[in-house]
Length: 330
Image (cartoon, rainbow, N blue to C red; front, top):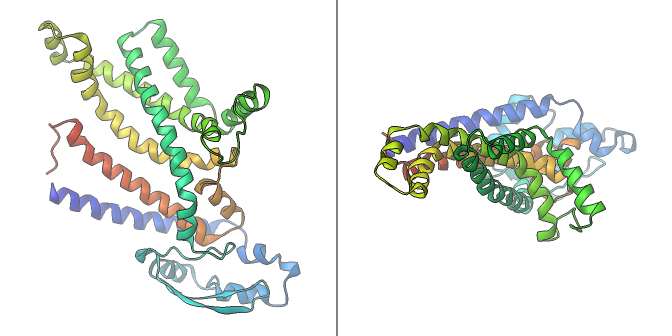
C-alpha cells in the first residue's frame, strides 16, 4: 500500500508538471498583448509599453519566463506610464513554493484571488454534486430494476436530453421561465444566498445526473446477472437486501470512478454557469482574466483547478478499498 501511494504521488507530480507546461504554452499562444490592452496603447506615454513589458518579464524568452514562473524571480510593479511604483520591488517564490505570482490587472497575489473566489465555486460545485448523486443513482436503479418498461424508457430519454442540452442554453431557459415569467426564483443572478444557488445548481447538475443514471443502470444490469445474486435470491434473501448489499455495492465501483471525473468536470463547467448567472466564482474570474490577457491569473487558476482534479481522483482511488474489500494495492 505504501509503495502504491508513493508511485501515485510521483505520478501526480509528473502530471502536474506536464499540465503546467501545457498551460503556460497555450496561454502564450493566444494572440494579443496584455500590456497593450492594459495601457490602451494610444493613451500611454512614449515607450511605456516596452518599459512595462520589460518590468513584467514579458520580453524574455518563453522557456525563461516558464522557469521564473516555476521557481520564482525578482519583480517590479509599474504604473500605466511605465514608471516604477514606490516600494514595488520584491521576489516571487514560484509555484513550487506556493506563489502563483501577481495579477497584472488586479495588482494582487493570484493565490489571494483564488482564496477569495474559490469558496463560491466550491459551494456551487458541491451543491450540484449533492443534487446529481442521489437523483442520478435513484433514476439508474429504477431503470435497471424495471428494465424495458416505461420507467426505463423515460429515464434513458431524460438522460439523453440532459447530456445533449448545452449548459448555457439550459441556464438561460431556467432564468427566463422561473425567474422572469413565473417569478418563483427572485433574484436569480449573483450570490445572494440560497435562492440564487437554485438555478445554477440545476444547470450544472443536469449533465451529471444523466451520466450517473446511465452508468448506474448499466452497472446494475451487469451485476444482476451474476451467480451470487441468483444464489442470494434462491436462499430467500429479501429483495431489498439483495439490491442494496449485493447489487448496488458491487455496481457502485464504476459509478465511484465517474464521480471523481464528474467533480472535476463540474469545477470546469462552472466557468459557463458562473458567467451566465453572474456568479462571483473562480470560473467567472478566469473568463475576465482571459479577456484581459492576464497571464499570471489564468495560469494560476488553471493550475490550481488541475491540482484539485488530480487530488480528487487520487482520493477516489483510495476509496475503492472501502467500497470493495477485494481490491488491494500492492
